Every structure is written in structure tokens, then in C-alpha cells.
Image (cartoon, rainbow, N blue to C red; front, side, top):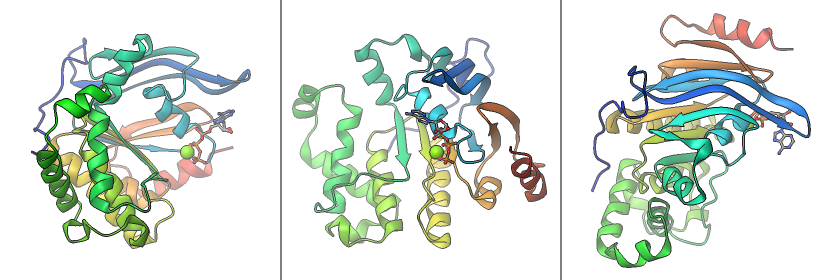
Length: 265
Ligand SMILES: Nc1ncnc2c1ncn2[C@@H]1O[C@H](COP(=O)(O)OP(=O)(O)OP(=O)(O)O)[C@@H](O)[C@H]1O
Ligand SMILES: [Mg+2]
């Protein structure tokens, strides 16, 4: 029922260094204005990477380029064994099914129960409506959805309408919905924003714990330095669309991160 444990995914990595994501010379311009310029980095399997940088430095644009919610202008993205920028529409759908995303704004259906919202998450792992109708037993999906809610600590709220839950609980429902996809990698864009400090921390702890338990790779954007330090293994720092920091979290402290943010122009 649970997402299977996945060992280091070497298929994605011709160089054999265990990376699930390899980005080279990635660039994005909007109307001739460069927002990302010549990005090169790799992310190893099972590693939690924090993507940090000032407002407007290009973090969300980068995250969206990785799964082509925004089309990059140039460069290469190798992820989960796929050359992402050359995928057909169908290949792209199958690829995206393996990538769990968590946004600041979670787009749950407010009038439906937590359980119904989580059940809907299963559609994201199917490549078309036929697969959805023909190959999934409703009882099995419901049981898996209940298990997902249990993993985010909300089994007792399964039948409650989502709009009656707190912001932190809603974000956890969104995470449970994402788990239904059985993702291989999780991308999270400020999942802790617009939550109070305690709920934000709970959401970050939950995401990093789930990723660790399932052996998943996690890339998370957060503006909270303490979250970066506590919940990541590696840090990528963006400044005006360029990677200016690429280092393990171990050996990084708040003073170093403060200096990084002070040197933004
Ligand atoms: N669709 C778009 N059209 C034009 N410009 C855009 C578009 N999306 C983003 N930008 C610009 O690209 C730059 C980077 O934006 P992005 O949202 O990636 O930054 P960010 O690092 O995620 O910032 P924040 O911390 O505020 O979320 C900004 O200058 C933004 O205005
Ligand atoms: Mg952003």
C-alpha cells in the first residue's frame, strides 16, 4: 500500500554518481529578460536539497522548469532517467506522474472531505482516464488514502471538510494527496509559507521525514533559514538566476546563510 522503498536511482545518472537530477546550462528568459542563466548542478538520490535565495532570484522558475510547467529557453535537464526537455507530451505526463509537488497554495477542493481530496491524488499517477477507471479498485484506493492521511497525522480528520481544517492541516492533506502519486522525487515550493511558525515547522519536519522514510529525493524552497539548516542535507543558493552556493548543509551555519542573503543585490 505504501510507496515502495527505493534505493539510489542510478539509471538517471550516466556518470554513475547516484544523481537523480542533473541540470546543465539551464537558462530561462521572459520576453528577452534573463531570469535563469547557465545553471549547472546535480542532486543525488535520497538527498534533501534546500533551494534558497532572495525574492525574485529565480527559485520557483527553476523548480517549474525542472518539470516543464515553464519551458526553459536552453539547457538540459536529466531527471529520473529521462531527458526531460525532449519528452513528448505523453512522455512528459508519465514523467510528471513520478514527481510529487507541494505548493504554498495547495488547491484542495474546500467543500470535499480530507479523504476525498486525498483519493483524488491517485489520478496523478495514472496516465489517462481509462487507467483511472479500469485498473484501480475503489476500496484499495480508499484504504491507501486513509493510510496516507494517517502518515500525515490526520487519520481522525478523514471525513472532515477541508475548509474546516487549519492552514497547517490543509497543507498536510495536500501532502497526503501527493503521496497517493507514489512519487520518486518531491518538489516543494515554500510549503511552510503562510503558516504560523509551529505549523510551518511541522510541515517541513513531516515532508523531510516522509522523504527519508521512503528513500525519496526532496527539493524544497524555503525562506526560513532555520528550516534550511534543520531539514536539508544540501543547499543550493540562487542569486539573480545563478547558482552561487552549492554545498552540504553540514558545516553551514546561520551566520553563513545570513552573509549569503546580505550579499544579494
Ligand atoms: N511568467 C513570468 N513572466 C515574466 N516574468 C516572470 C514570470 N515568472 C517569473 N518571472 C520573473 O522571474 C524572476 C524570478 O521569479 P521567481 O518567481 O522564480 O522568483 P523566486 O526566487 O521564486 O521568488 P520568491 O522568493 O518571491 O518566490 C522575477 O523577476 C519574476 O518577476
Ligand atoms: Mg517563488
